[in-house]
Image (cartoon, rainbow, N blue to C red; front, top):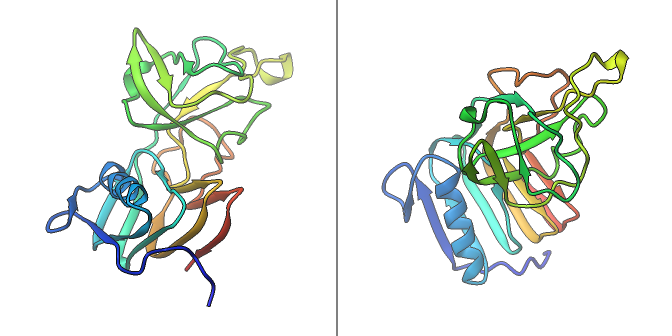
Length: 212
């Protein structure tokens, strides 16, 4: 058997009702994941129900995320998007959309333009504050997104921001098991661009992980 480092005894449940942590969105699941990680790792069991995710469930090492197969549904929240009012550059931790009213604190977001299409999809950021039309983010932007709205053939890059993200996300994690979840990453509304790449599960630079 493969050694995972997971505690076989530590279990915390998440559910619409009747669980250790009650809720129907990513916040409830994330609270359980964070709590279990802080106590050394173990199993987060998501009970039957439909959970709407406005941001990725961000995994830590030594977590077993499990559900009740087709009865536990993780679903992407309806997509919103806006063009950017000004460029979003490398090293910034904020973006300024033309319509900030579409976004809320806690949303996962990515940017893109006509040259950088899906670069942020495997590393989404989270809105932690909104002030005077500016969205402040949980981490640094790693690319330059250009808000020039000329047609692409004239050199315009037309940067956009949208709440697109993988539903379950791990970056540099170890000893993770994902099991028994129905993951619906389809967005109901095109967020303002074509060739949208979303994913159900993204484990980036991670090792000793399994998805069942």
